[in-house]
Image (cartoon, rainbow, N blue to C red; front, side):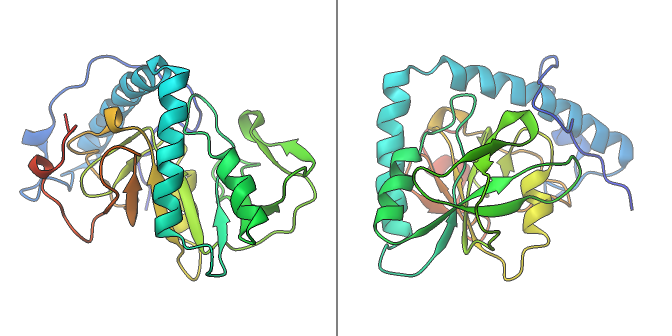
Length: 239
């Protein structure tokens, strides 16, 4: 069965974001037909461009402060005393920079991995990272450990372009994380990381979208994703 996805790259173009609520099923999530799936894909493209603009406009000082707060929340969610393999990411395009946290947790004994994207349309793989590791470059020249052992993470930290109260993540449009989470076994704990200004009411989730278990922003309280179904009105910062 074919599925409509957004562009499989990091480019973002598009116009204004239309309202699709009248085109959805009564539950507010399921699209009715393929044309409306294409409409949602176009909406996501435009919304992605808007949210990336907000993120790139954040000051370096603010981003650094948020990264420290996010790291503190992660320490609470992922106790260092428990053996874990945590997939983080190498930050691009003003994503929260967790490289200091990666080094700190590695020194405390947590095994750290980085995702590897080498081909479009394929799941990510993960390679173990250690401070000082030699780096190679995958798609979009994103670094990964050149000599790291391939591992299966028990925790995946996923940067978000946008997110909604149900824990659904708007990414860059390549579908890498959803494709990967669908095949990882056992399924890891998945934590979405972003900034509070990129909270939206819904991403109009599609059948291939997989909600995060937690969303962490450093400002909004860390909260569970789809399992809690938290009301939009209960969270500050939703637009």
